[in-house]
Each structure stands twice: as structure tokens, then as C-alpha cells.
Image 1 (cartoon, rainbow, N blue to C red):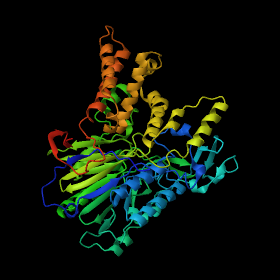
Image 2: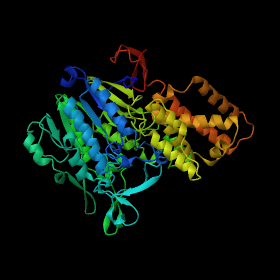
Image 3: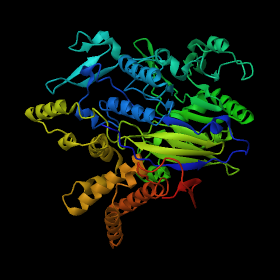
Image 4: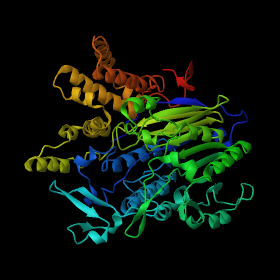
Length: 575
């Protein structure tokens, strides 16, 4: 079955110093594929690792079908003739050794068979903790539809649990060794490679010297007190004229001592902890950016974490009325961080982490811009990856490729049928929609998972009580409000990919509902919160309207012509 491809291209006109075109841009347009947040679980090599549908619909990503989605994405990349692929973190479920090896096996195959060069970086799920950690899960699905527990912790072996030491979550050392040939260490084919800890320069570069300075023991920094941590950042020139800057934005702060072992917090806050706890990183990034400009290199930075607010300007409104712990506000980078990296010379930055599809812009003091391109996850709604095409020094085309038809995505449906039946036979009501098993495409299946996720997790966690009470009513307005909330989350995660799937008629119904509530003579908490909801919804709706233009597969990928209109520095390709 051939992958269906829908392209959403737009051009980024980056205001940099003018100059001759780079070598990479002159030698045919260089294209780079970005595949983010695959969260692979090796359900093919280890079918005992299949997770239940019940846990899938309560997670921000799938655990099982994404294995097939990664392969489908790579097949599409190969068909397009793209040879550079970046995976900006969270390649696996939680960095388990067994899943790490599965990703390596897949990447090795495409590298050997098709000549694809891969470049990876860390995510908050890999490594889950800097020096690794034991992993225990209670929701693996058995052939009978029941769930069982597996653990990597041998101390739990006598407590009714099956022990598999390959479920241990890797730390920096194990991860970097596993993905050694995918950017973490110098390769003979690279034109250049360095880390923040290297002593040589571009002019004195020598492959053997780079090897000598690249071991993980030489890439350390003092985290706090006497705790030493690793950093996996690197700069690589895979083709002449193109510099890929991998920024390790993970910071694992200490979290006390348990059973004589130092514990660490997760790294989900991303860049918010970088400037304070990795003071060496920004000066290195500044040096790289200055050197790239001096040597006329095209610099593309990537990191697992976003550099710009990913809530499309709605974050202050959400915090003011719904609280600080809603809509991942703790993960929104402070504007001072974007300012610092803009001042350091970063203009193109590609990120994952949030599973959202958008492009944020930081406008500098002189009017130049830092573009933060958020790559959606291939493991949730709407599954997609991005292609960055370097047109010349100042122009980049970004295309979003929808992963619709994924061979094998429905191979576990019979097992989910058994799970559903077993739950019913146990006297319980399944929390997931069985209609998902009628999905004709991977994208449709992801949408069913997402609808259940919104209902079981996002709505009860994010919305104020008065809106929850209104949603619980059994009337037409409650149903319309439920549809609106679902579309709100679709827009938040999928951006323009979701906008094009919301009929204008439904938007008109939403507007009529808001207007009707505004006409109420008595003000109330419900009226106030509906006004807030409208403003938040509008933020997610408006910004995306002018971002991308859909193109049918029969149209060429290249830009035909540019419209004279602009939207926040992004030129829009006309129909």
C-alpha cells in the first residue's frame, strides 16, 4: 500500500546578512527530513511489549502502531530521494535498551540499503534519566486480552513480575553508544564535526583528532555542587556547505537520594533550565553561528525542545484564567531564552517534544527573525513529518507530509478486540472507543485515539469546573461545546492540518453559540469562562489560517509563485 502524501509548503524568508549562495544551496536544493517523537516500542521483535488500548488513549502518543509509522515515513523519505534525516529526540518509548536497539536496527537498514544519513539528539524520554533507570510497566497486553506487568528491576522478580533486563531505560552512555554513527560521534564521511568540548578549529580539523576528543567522558560539565553530567550536543557538516547543529537541551536536576542512589528529575522543561545549568552551551552556539556566517555555511539548528511559545500566543490568557499547570505551560520557553538564542545568531531552529505542528517566530531588535519549526509527532493526531528545503542562504521551504496510509497499522486490531471483550467480561466499561478498530487509515486511527485522549485526560485536567459541568449536561449546547473543545485541542496540536478538516458550517455554529451566551442579561462564571474559551479558541484558529496551502499530489513540490501577502514573516505560496 502506497503512502498517501499531502504537502503543506511555505517559505521562510530569513533576514540574514546578504551574501553569495552557499555551496549546499548551489549544488541542487538540499532537502532534510525531520521525523520527531517516534516513541518506538519494539512490538514486532518483541510482541510481549504491546501496550493496551486503555493506556494508549490516556497517553499523548501511541505506543504500538508508531513502529509501522516510522518505517512508512522512512519509505516515503527514500522515494523522495532525500538522504539526510534528522530525528530530534524521543525516538523510543522511554529509552529502553530493547526499543533503542530496534530503532538502531531500522536506521541501520535504511543507511545501508539506501544511503540515508541520520542525525539524532536527546529527548526527555531518551534518556529518561541521565545515568539510566529501571523500568516497570503494568499494561502490557497478553494474547487473551488481559494485561500483565514487566520490569527490568531484578529485585521485583520474586513479587509476581516477569523480569526482562532489556527493559531498563538507557542513560547517556548507553544511548550515545547505540546511536554512535548517527551524529553523536565523528564519522570519516563527515566534512567536519565538533562538540562544545573540542579544542580544535575548522582549519585544524582532523578526523583522528576529532575521534580522540569525542568520547563521552570528555563531554562533561558540572551540573551543581559536585554532580557531573554529560552533554550530547554536536555540530556536523554532512555535505559541503551545510552545518547541522544538534543542541542537547536536556537538563536533569538532582531530586534527592533514594536507597543510597542519587535521583534525578525529568528533563521535560527543556530550554528553561539550559541557560542556568549549562552555561557553556550558549557561548558555543554563538561561536558556531559566527563561524557559519564567516565561512558562508547554511546553519540549521535542531533540538528536542522548542525555543518559542508553542501555544500560538494563548499562553498568557490560559495562565491568567485557567492556571499555570494547563496546556503544558511549564514547558513554554521563557521569551528571554528565545532572545538569547536569537542574539547568538540562530535563525532556523527545528524542534519536537510538544507533538504540535506550527512555526513560531521570535522577532529580534533589528527586525531579523528566529524561526522555531515545530515538527508534529508521527505517533499521534495528526501524524506527519517535515521536509526542510534549502533554497539559498536566505530562503527555506518547509513542507509537512501527512502519514495517512501506513502498512501494518491495523495488525494489532484483533488483539485489541480481545482486550475490549475481556474488559466487558470483567464487568467494566472500556474507556476507549471500539469504533477506532474500524479505521481505514493510520491518520483516522490516530484521530480516534486523540478523541479519547481529549475526553479522558485533557478535558478533566485543563478545563475549569463550570465548563466541565456544562459538558456533563445532556442537551444540544453540551454536544456543540464538546465538539468545540475537541476542535480546540485538534487545532492546538495539528494546526493547519486540523483547520482544513473543520467545516466552516461548524465554525459558524460555534460563533452562534458564543454570541447567544454573550446576549445573556445576567453575568455569571459560566459566561465569563465561555468568553475566555472563545478567545483561546480564536488564538488557535486565526494564526494558522494563513500558514500553509494544501497541494494535491499531482502538483510539483517546487514553489510555483509567491503571493504578495505576508503573515508574520512567512510568505505564502498561492494556489
